[in-house]
Picture 1 (cartoon, protein in one colour):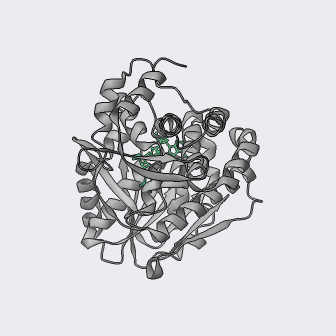
Picture 2 (cartoon, helix red, strand yellow):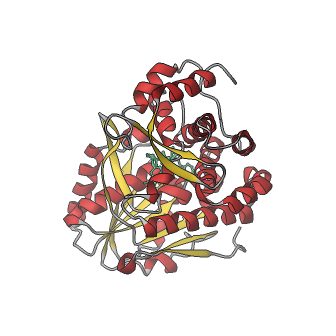
Picture 3 (cartoon, protein in one colour):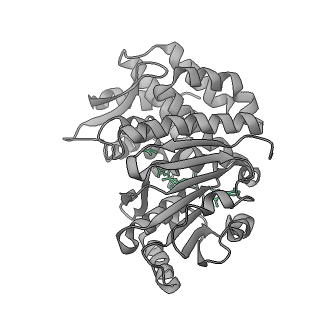
Length: 366
Ligand code: NAD
Ligand code: GLY
């Protein structure tokens, strides 16, 4: 895969601007990202699945530094406050000073926890994201949302803390299980569905090549999504407005993930089904056309994503879970809906009866 040009996208945040490098062979060539390390200490945070595959390559870039690794067990359940505590202990044992760097090597679970650890150590040190899942490359590694889950809910403790660089080596996708790979495309489709009509059409045209993992097409898709997200983050870093649009499909999706106890559905799968439900709700409210819903459904299906609510999930409990969403205010449902492909908006005061009707219809159809 090494003959593909590396793409560099800048997340423009003044003095905190940083590059996102996307390409093949980036881990085998550490000189590029090594320049981002300011001090003499580094802690690599990874997990027990990813470290045996890629830690050695990262270690080659850390030659001559004081470094160690902290490995999480694999799974969402380990994105916990307790593990942040342990990672901070590891920084302490390393003797990490203010110029130390945390390196996140893994998917979104590792990236979110490692970023939060970096935000906490001495009130904030550098961190570098080395995402190894498609979802982490196109979404979670970019934008500085870091955090962990609490027993009362997912992602409820965290901080905005931007990385110093993102190193997305698409060679690492070679070992990613097929289901995880497919789930990542939901976040790509989401970006196009929210605000990039031309990209949506491009995805429709290239869905087969993406599903078949054609390297050049995959790289182009990742870069287009990252460029879109980088623009949103630069305009609205802390989600005062526009960035909330990136949650298209997430209110439904989180409810579905929670109803499945985070084991039935992957995050991307919940987002895919959630986007379809959001499109159907938009249509019901007279905001969009059936043709747009149809295009969205077809694209998601072509990319191997589910669009139906799994059996055994009932409308009323799902609605109850949706009432807990962070975007709601004054006891009213606030959702990201759309006016067709490329035009999402935040809609407050959505009637529960309309949401329920969509959930009821979706639990009785394939
Ligand atoms: P994940 O981190 O759990 O990774 C998925 C699985 O793939 C894991 O089993 C992991 O060990 C394995 N894996 C990772 N890279 C691999 C590779 N190259 N080869 C083989 N196996 C590999 O899941 P994810 O989908 O990457 O991330 C989901 C998390 O991201 C959730 O916690 C979600 O809340 C978070 N997230 C955060 C943001 C954000 O903006 N910070 C955005 C979206 C999602
Ligand atoms: N994943 C949504 C965001 O970064 O804002």
